[in-house]
Figure 1 (cartoon, rainbow, N blue to C red):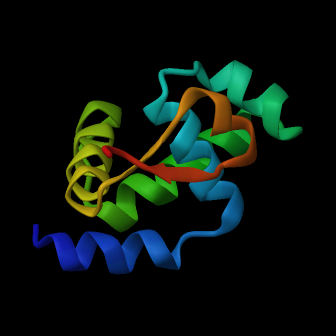
Figure 2 (cartoon, rainbow, N blue to C red; figure 1 turned 180 degrees about the vertical axis):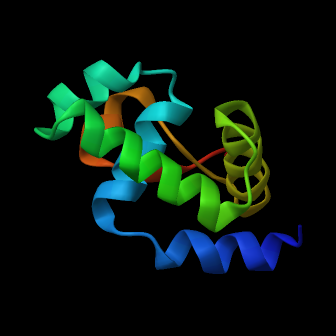
Length: 93
């Protein structure tokens, strides 16, 4: 899948969906994501399912791989200290 398409699809996701993606990328379990975002575990699962569908991911591992690809090419990735805010910072010097 072309990276430009993945970027476009990521931009189409809601803020909540993008926050859930940041946390899943950081390895946070879905139950903890629900607590951090103040939503039900079912809502987190729905966010992840929509994100997987939008990005054409077969499963969560595939989803994380696609995120890693896009964010590494852009020089952006969630950083542990910024995960709660959903903010991304530029990697490297």
